[in-house]
Image (cartoon, rainbow, N blue to C red; front, side):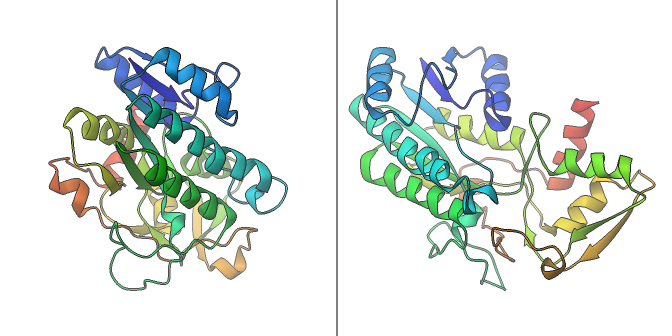
Length: 279
C-alpha cells in the first residue's frame, strides 16, 4: 500500500493521476483524516496502514505569507509535520519521498548550477522551513528521497501559468520580473520522477528535478502568452517588491536525475503538453 499526503493539492492530484494510470493502489487521506502536525495521530495512522512508500506532498506553500501571518503554520506543516512523517516512516521501515525547493539556496551562485550537495542558505522563511524538513528526513528516516524542485506549474490549483492567463484577460500589458533565473517544473514531470526513483530503486538521497532548459519569469510568461494579444514587459525585482526575498539565480543541476535514466523534457515542451491536456 502507498500513502500520499497532500493528495488534493497541485502535486498530489497529479501524482494520484499517475498512480491511477499505473493501477497502483494508494490511500490519499484528507487533512482531517490525517493531521500531519499531530505526531501521535500520525504514528497511529501510519502504523495501522503500514504503507511501503509514503509520498509526502503535503506542504505550506504561501511563500510571502510565511514571512509574517503564516509563519507559524509554515513551520508547523513544513518542519514539524515533515518530522512526524519521517519518524513514522522510520518506525515501519517505509520509503519516504519528500518534496523540497530551490529556495533552500540563496541565489548568489551567479555562474553555473547548484549541485545536490551545494551549500544551502535560504533567504526566506518558507525556504528555511523546507530545509528544516530536509534535515528531519535525513535525521529520522533511513530510506528517503529528497527531491528539490522549482517554479512548479500544472493543471491543478493556483500557479504562475493560470495567473498569467488571468492577467492577460484583464490587461493589455503586464509586467513580469526579468532578473530572476530558474527552471519551471511541470507537476507531471515531477510526479513521474517521484514514482520513477521508487520503482527503479534509485540510490536514496537528495535529487534535483525540474524541467530542462532555463529562463527568467519574464521569458516564462512570454512563452505562456505567446499566442495572446497581451504585451509582456520586463521589469526588475526592485520594481516588484515582495515580502519574501527570492533567490535571483536558483538554477539547479539535473545531472543526478538524468544519470539514473530519467528523461527530462524542456520546460517549453512541458508547458505545451500541459496546456494541451488542460484545453
